[in-house]
Image 1 (cartoon, rainbow, N blue to C red):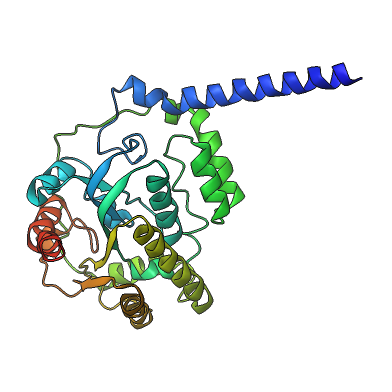
Image 2: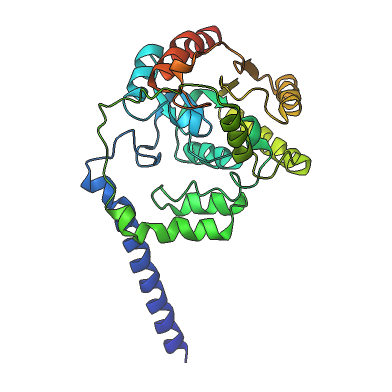
Length: 305
């Protein structure tokens, strides 16, 4: 009886080992096939090494993600004269931001400065936090899976994270031209489009219960960075959506964190950025990224050395 149980246990362990091996193989196959997929891919973790020292790590959502695609990452590193890692992802809030930052440190990486870009709506909605599909385009790592589980990412998104590694779309993904740029320009501010964009951002409206919870998460994110000897700065990017719902409550929270934890705040929401610097109503194009980096981000980093 004991021998049978031991045999079953051995078979189970071998099966798990084979499954994990296949998962790792398919997870990193695009990376190997494409000679280390370039900056413009949505994945962050193909490029994230271990035991690296960075001058600056930037974190946020899609508006921050645009600081890395095409030639943008090389451009901002050249302007700033600093080594940068961009954790920004499309369709995320403070919960995914916290998870990715913790994972960054768990791999033994260090950063002198965290620029945490703040999107007002990200503190009000579940859809881009626990229900975000931000892991789907990342290689599988059990450590990341555990972090996501502990931080409340839904079971459906956790399952998709794993299952997606065995799809043709994952295996056959290819890098785009890394020498390209994105100079698309928004032509006008259409009130109907502004309203539609705001409605799309606020999936759950201005949920005060959600706000209280995500306020706590943002404070935990700051604690994680500071525990790793990283200076933290909050930055709000310009946009053409007007004053967003829930702005006053978020700004009060940021000032509270500033008082409690010594975090600096730079609010550029109302800076006079022309439409020629935007690819849509709230995302900078390549020229906008360059302009913001040279005229706003660089002075922040110089000031807070």
